[in-house]
Length: 516
Image (cartoon, rainbow, N blue to C red; front, top):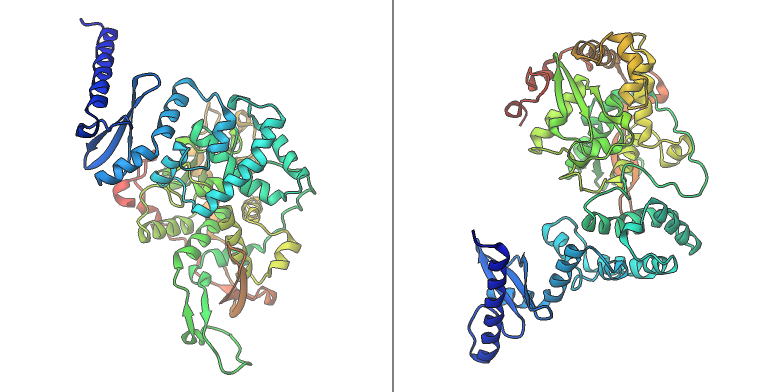
């Protein structure tokens, strides 16, 4: 057998000789190794790739890179443009990152950063030239001085404690806490670690970094029956733009005036927001658990649909106790099915992968819209401490009303720490909670949600939201008149469980054919 080292040596000698011939040919050279630039272009499946030869070491770089173009002239230009960055990137990956200052200071300079180039090309990040320039300013005006001041020279030396010190460093510079967490930490610094280290041990998007400041006000309770009536009615979430009305005293009451309204075109947004709120209020899932929800997380245990909450596929949970199985009421199953069918969901419901950044502003906006339908202004939300977490509190409050669900079962569904050995002994007398346990108590929880059968009157009213850009948007939309405190019987929360038929009877899997 021929020794591999001998073959590699022969290959290198041949390449060296080829480079010498290439130099001698000069302007008459039509060979694939471009003169002076020392690279090879390869056409693979119609797309040009490049491989370089390092003049300093006189060795071929064993790494080809796609140039994402089928145009030869453009490929030559890109190969020359990215030559130094590609070669530098290769040695960084081979030997480990030696110069952490250089890494961070050049990261938001596209011509020098192959990490950013690859992220932009793959669509992992969508950054305009203006944002890239802004991020480069944040990096070099704040993070680089911090690294130098603390004499940090290795990326391995940057830990959670380092990030906390960096936050204090920024606070002393007079930067707002909102800018620190949302812009500098999450927007500028975190993606570097995700691209370079390929892990999130330093940054966990499900755990907020606590900055020094006043303690958050305790979350206020939502009106229970009114909230559930709203969440179960998608039509109440529709937003309308008001047409010009000549009569300034015109009152928006009831549905008779819908002919004078123009429906908002982006229906997917409010359908998604309503679904987020419904999932949280009927399953108790946290923001991160909702955002990274997949169709394969939904399974059936003896005819009872469940959400299997786990850290599969790189998703990070808040605590070890967060791994759990939570029953899903028929109303929520139906909403998930309709959303999946309408928007052709194949895998993740609300994102593309576990690497997608959580839409925190979207969740805040979802709660803002729900509060408006319940008749609360933004000031009311602030006074009552209404936030998206209020829906998780609502879930716990409702389940605690059921006499058949003990506190430890509710805590388990919430993902709180419970004595599992005690639960197993009390409810199962076995080593694990089996299917009979989940069938019994899942059905109790779902039947309780179906028993919430009150209907509230509502009027068409004008409401104002603050959108993600900070602009005020005004709509006409149904607003529940909870102050009347009146309701009537309804079959809205029917005991029909036909929605469960979308699942396979297999307790361990979801039928992709039926659910796709």
